[in-house]
Length: 198
Image (cartoon, rainbow, N blue to C red; front, top):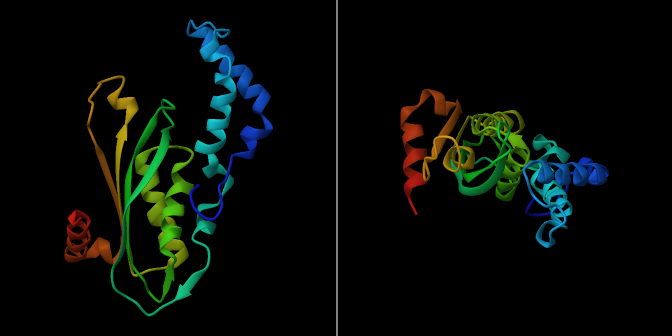
């Protein structure tokens, strides 16, 4: 994950030989010649990729927010356009997009980069977009205990664009609201209007 520490999935590392063996078997079972030049290193490359894209399993997302700071700012804080990449747990196909997090502190704030790290910790595992959205909101609420949290996640899913219904360019948007965002239409509107600003 970007930032202070780059995590790798140690379970993948510990099982490298078995994973490479099974990737080679899958290549053979889909009709490939596993000995051709372009595929000889593919099992190893895929395994190294798994170490990275499934690194979220190595970290407790609650701990990613790290040290919090006492600050009497009780107005809206937004970090938007946090790019993420994840893997659909139904097809193991990539999906990716942007997450937007807004919260109203109640005397405790997190470093802004920690919100991006939280998104990485939640998305770098087998996931569904709906769960990502709820998990980010729930963790923000649990750790920071703000007056309110709103999370909007946009995603393009290759399991929908490149296979099945093949609706290229379709975008899925999910949201989670907690606290004052749930009860205040004006606050939700302010958050959404600020997201539209460049």
